[in-house]
Image (cartoon, rainbow, N blue to C red; front, side, top):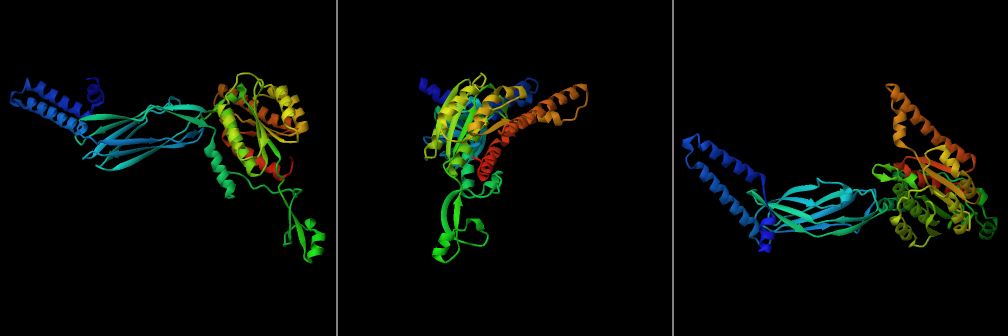
Length: 448
């Protein structure tokens, strides 16, 4: 009895046409009290409606082969990117159907209106594609897919439930990572906003001796090889390899600030992943350190094929802490981990010059042994307030305060430069491009 109830009653839903028909019959019954010429018409209409409902019920529930649905989920989702999902549905009924689909997506997306409707002829199939953009890393729980089917009569609909609960992990932005890798391999990074950097001089990493061609630097002529061969030969140099590049990610409360649904920590994680990939493509060694009130995860610099997977596995689990950054612990950790001069890229956020001055002594110590690049964020909302024209006294006050904070950010850049520390002040959405550009510029200028 319970199975019959679940099959025929729980999954049966009246449609708008049925309510319209019932309303019409009710109106006929009402008017029949005043209009005697209506006679038995209300009863006829009502029984015709009941007969149509029974026919509709038989059409929907009597077929052995009815519909098939499959939701195709990726193994993992990319944080901050549009991830494509698809739903495949096929009609085995002997008549065309109207369908409505509800996908029970994770609550983190906060979407309550994800409804797809379509029509399918008998034997036809269709693939519905849509995109989801997660803004937090972690595990996302997908529920079932609910399919509502209506016959051509469209008086009632039958619900089908496909699939079950599926957990999908959301990782740092590997889609963005693949995009940069493809562009780098095809030598089209300029399409991503990566600038072509003019090389200053040449590196001292010897590659090979080759024949001279017009345009070669005459200072690279190998006179001994030229004398032996009887033709002009030059030394060829290549970029220095196996240099250590460490991304240091601050996980303190300053990185909790949101921008377009994602925290600054997530932007820093995505940029670190892309930068590590570019560094490995340049045959450098990429490493990772996370820091909050104490040293977190450490991935020593390496350039083996599994290194990027190690970095991604660590970044997947990182969460914001709610204490101040312990720069002294960072300095101690760097001295213990980095045994040679390295490029250290610190992703942090300083909202005031006083906050920077508290950490400056430790940054100067790090910069004494390594090439330090400090990356911090421009507050785009304050910039918008500063650029907005003031219309009253309150507006002038708000504009003045916003300009003061914006000016302090520029003072931080000057203060860091005064002590020989490189810096990038960037909006969160331009973080990856700006960091990769600076890394390539540092490589070209042979500063490491």
